[in-house]
Image (cartoon, rainbow, N blue to C red; front, side):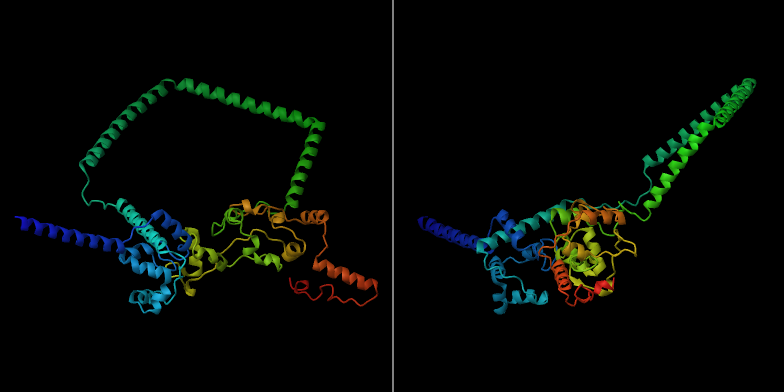
Length: 426
């Protein structure tokens, strides 16, 4: 009996030892980290190229890390994937070749614990996404069966009610006809009296109008007042011809200046670069939008309009030029052909801010024409705007030319800007 108990003890110790090794190896293969810390690290280092449930520059990490269970390999890949590729690691080479030999950023600054936290966060978030999809009610197919008994009885009830209503209405119509026949003479008298009253009212109005027309002073006052009112209205209409102040067309893409210029503090000339160096402020190309929106707000319907116009596939991140088509923006600010306006002269030389003409665009969800842009409005601005020539290369050249003229030296048109492109080509 004693020998049996000794054998049992040794067996139990062996089992416990094996279980301990198994648990230890499991904990190594699937190290548990802090998901909250992992989320912060993921957003700071990974979101530029990866999403958990969608492919971007890199693969969707949720299913990728679910399939890959070797956390030790994952830590090595994230910290220094280039070393694994150089060492001809089969897994590393497979990923490298799958994504057309685009190298992943090396994160040697992340410790093993940091990488473990990131992996834990990705797996937990992917698990939540899958659970949410499982909880979503699946659309149920309509059963192909005949009409229910409730529907049949309902239709029979509606028919019976309609039959009863028709019978009641027939009785009511018959009663009304009998009442009309009894009171026919009274109705005729009432109709004659109403007609006489109407005729008398018309005669009274005619008499009142005739009395007014006989008053020459009143007629003269009405004519003068009408002439002044019509003249003022005509003058106002002619004065505002082709003045589109407040014009706010609907654009093909809902672009918010309030968000970009106001909340995000993006400088106007980041998009409208021509305002600083040419006559036109220019509409930015869609490539300027893609500087940010290749990664930012990729799920937005409005951003997908940009993708469609460029023939861009966000999943493969490739462009198809055969699918590209221009976006038909609607012009808001438009001067007549007889007027010449140069943005660079006002913005660069004059130092005028965009808001002085275009209004507070940083508060506009949809841009509209803020100023009237009439000749009077421009002249008033030129009258009150003080010219500051100190340290301005343009005005320095003008002063230098004047000094030469005073000294009797030769001054050509080129010195005064006569060979600038905008002098002839505008």
